[in-house]
Length: 125
Image (cartoon, one colour):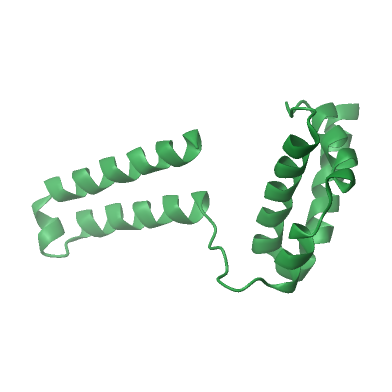
C-alpha cells in the first residue's frame, strides 16, 4: 500500500507540474514530456488485471498454502522478511506468481524458476 501511495503522490506532483507549464494547454513539448513520464510511472508500477481469468491466472490462484512453503524458504534465504503464518506465506507467493503470470503469460513458470535460481545463486555467493 505504501508503494501505491508513493506512486499516487508522484503522479499528482507531475500532473500539478504539468499544469504549471503554459505549453501544456497548447500541447507543447513540456506538457507532453510530463504526460509521458506519468504514463511511464503507471506502466512500471501497476499491471492490468484481466476482467476474465486467463489459464495462467486460474492456475496461480489455485495454489494451496502448502505449495508456497518452499518458495517462501527461498525468499527468506535471500533476505526477504515473510511472516511464517501459512496465510501470509500464501499471500506473498500468490502476489509474486500473479505478477509473473500477468507479465509473462504462459512463460510464468520459467520466469519464476529463473528468479528463484538467481536468488539462490546470490544467497550462496
